[in-house]
Structures are given as structure tokens and as C-alpha cells.
Length: 361
Ligand SMILES: CC(C)(COP(=O)(O)OP(=O)(O)OC[C@H]1O[C@@H](n2cnc3c(N)ncnc32)[C@H](O)[C@@H]1OP(=O)(O)O)[C@@H](O)C(=O)NCCC(=O)NCCSC(=O)C[C@H](O)C(=O)O
Ligand SMILES: [Mg+2]
Image 1: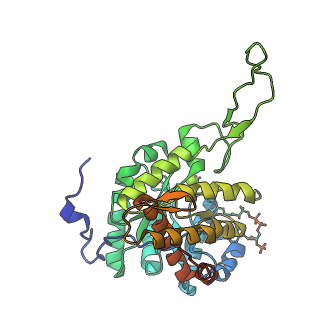
Image 2 (image 1 turned 90 degrees about the horizontal axis):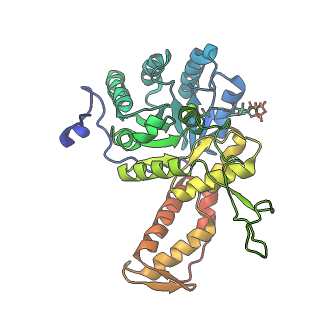
Image 3 (image 1 turned 60 degrees about the vertical axis):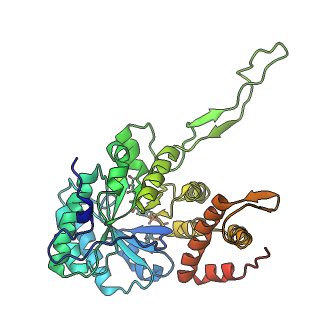
């Protein structure tokens, strides 16, 4: 595969297109809330969600019936034109690049609402060539629409080839904002034997070793604890590393068991701890879960601030509550403190909680 030379990487791909960003802003995006713009009930809820969710995403791809594709696209244009999104970002998920709808998605949305769209999510990305196609087309459309800032691109990791090519996808364009896991399509593409949209599976487990009898013979029929494992650990970790390497942002994806808010929270928290900055929300009740999980806890921020205060210039080692802290733990604490500061800028409740923390070094 040929790569652009370094000097051309940040050059606009069309005459008159806005200059690419050199750094992707770390805007809070704990929940990317999906809605169907062709569904009147859902669309009616959008204005009331502004300010309560970091990202609203008008979905045009899977979950939208073929007969409603045009209505969804037109519905999104109408909503974007008539709504002030305030602090909430507006994203869309376009149809897949091999579908009959995607060209009209892009050629309709960019001229009509390109100035309001922050990020375009591209599904089923297979490799750098998919991002480069969208990159050039967006530059042409942005130039034609006289936009003054580039629309960013987010890829969904939902094919085996996409996972294998994850690093080149992240580095394919300066528009790349981040990646999400698409566990349902990925499971199908990999021929995993599951039927769910994200989350765990009771069959994916390890079992405690068997106890032995008095002669030292293993009693394999004895009751033994089993521990369910995370089907998505490998892919999320791979995605997090690729994103971190390229200065862009990793997200978990959908959790389809809307009723199981407990397991949803667990899955989101695993992703948060591994380095993801947010997740998808498919139903209004998942927004609060995501906002809670992807905001550092007051306890973690209190501890992180103690470490920052105690470490002074950042060199050497100190003991806090019986544990050694040094440059490496300080850097972890700074990740949390900086995230808390960003979130406090847009979330007054969190700001009040973080401001109430007293640091005794
Ligand atoms: C999952 C749903 C189909 C459930 O819908 P419903 O049965 O209507 O739920 P409720 O009765 O509990 O809804 C209560 C009210 O809330 C409104 N509602 C529901 N969902 C949303 C929403 N996402 N945004 C705004 N408002 C919403 C209902 O209309 C009810 O309103 P009212 O009657 O006036 O009280 C539904 O939630 C849904 O379709 N969600 C989105 C699904 C989606 O986007 N799926 C695609 C993403 S996942 C994916 O693509 C897989 C991925 O790519 C992969 O490969 O892994
Ligand atoms: Mg999918």
C-alpha cells in the first residue's frame, strides 16, 4: 500500500476544502446516543436530550428499514436545521460504503447540514482505502459547501479484516476521530457462535480446577465455580492501543440487552478501565449509565489529586496509604484529573462533586 508523504498528510484533499486538524479535540463523548430520525417518537425526544447527553447520533444504517432510508436522511436534515444543539455534538452514522444509499447520504448531508455535523461514523470499515475514499469525497463536498472546518470521521470496527487493519485505519487520515467496536457485525463476520448485540455469553467461561479426593484423584463431577470471561477483551484492547498510538479516541459500542442495566454497566466499565472514552447508547436509559461509568468517580479524583499534590515536580517516589507512587502512577492520575476537568466544563453536577473534594496531601 502506498502512503502519502509526511508533508502532504495535512494538506486539504480538494481546492477550497478546510485545512485538516493537526490534533483531534478531546471533547467529552461518554454516550453516543443513537436515534432513528425517521421515527417521529424518537425524533420528538431529541430536543429534550440536548445537554443531558454528550453526543446525539442520527442513525441512517442498520436498524433503519430499507423503506425508511430516505425518510431517515431527510428527517436528520430537518432536525439539524431546526435545532440548536448547544453543548451536545451532532454525529451521524451513514450507510455502508457498498450500499445503494451512502452516496446520497454524503451528498445530501454535507451541503445541507455539514456546518452542524461534528463527526460522520462509517460502518464496516475494512482498511485504509475506505477511509481515504470518504476523506477525498468529504473534502470535495466541504469545498463546494464552503465549510470552514473539516468534518471528522469515526470508523466502526466490525469485520475481521477491519480488526486486522486497525492501525492503518486509525492513521489513514487526519480526519480520524476514533473507533467503536461493532460486536454484532464483528461476531457474524468472524463466524463466532453467538446471537447477541454485545455483552458477555454464559458459555464463554473458565472453570475452577476439580477438588481431589483422599487418594489424590481429581473429582471432575464435583461442583465447581465457573467464571464468565469477556468475549470482547482482545478486540477492545487492540482498538485502544491503535487509537492511543494515533492520538484518536476508542469507544465501546452497543449493548443490546436494554433491560439488563447491570450487565450493561459492567460492560461499559470494563471498556472505561481499558482506556475507552465512551460508548453507544441505544435507549434513553443507557445514557445515565454511560455518563456515570465514563466519568471518573469522586473517590478516584480525590486519590489522584492527592498523588499529584504529593509528587511535586513529578520525580522520585512517595508512600501514600502504604502504597508506592512514582512518575508512572502520577501519569495515570493525571489522565483522570484532566478528564475530570474536561467533564466539569460541560457537566455542572460533576463539577460540584469534584469541587467539593478536599485534598489533604
Ligand atoms: C431498542 C428499541 C427498539 C426499543 O424501543 P421501544 O420498544 O420503543 O422502547 P421503549 O418502549 O422502552 O421506549 C420508551 C420511549 O423512549 C423512546 N425511545 C426508545 N429508544 C429511543 C432512542 N434511542 N432515542 C430516543 N427515544 C427513544 C420510545 O420511542 C418511547 O417513546 P414514548 O412512547 O413516547 O414514551 C429502541 O430503543 C431503538 O430502536 N433504539 C435504537 C436502536 C439502534 O439504533 N440500533 C442500531 C445501533 S446497534 C448496531 O447497529 C449494531 C452494531 O453496528 C454492531 O454491529 O454491533
Ligand atoms: Mg454493525
